Image 1 (cartoon, helix red, strand yellow):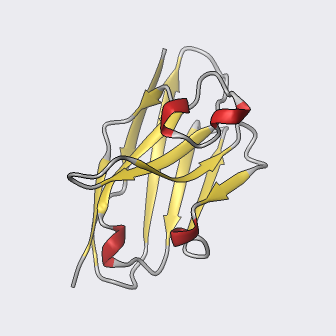
Image 2 (cartoon, rainbow, N blue to C red):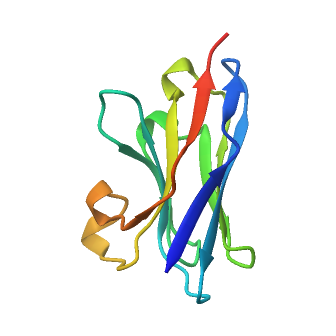
Length: 126
C-alpha cells in the first residue's frame, strides 16, 4: 500500500515562488519513480516533472524548465516541486504520483502512474 498527500498549494502573485511537498506513506521503505502532474478544468492531466527512484534522473517539460525543479528526500519519503517565477498559466491543481512498476517506456506518462494524491491547488494571480 502506498498513499500520497500533497502540501503547499496556495495563492501567489505572478513572479512569485511556491514549494510543493508530497508525503509518501507505505508499509515498506521501497522507493518509486515519482512525478508531479497538473490539471485545469476541461483539460487532461499533464506531466510537469518526474524523478527516478534514487533521485539521480530528473526531467521537466519545456514550459517549466528553468523555473520548476523536482527533488526528493528518500530519508523523509518526500518529493518536492520548487516553483519559481510563477506565471498565471501555471494555475492548476497539482498532483503527486508514483510509478509502482517503473517501466522505462512509460516514464513520466499519465498512463504509467499508478498511485495519485488528491491534489493541491496552485493559483497564480495578481
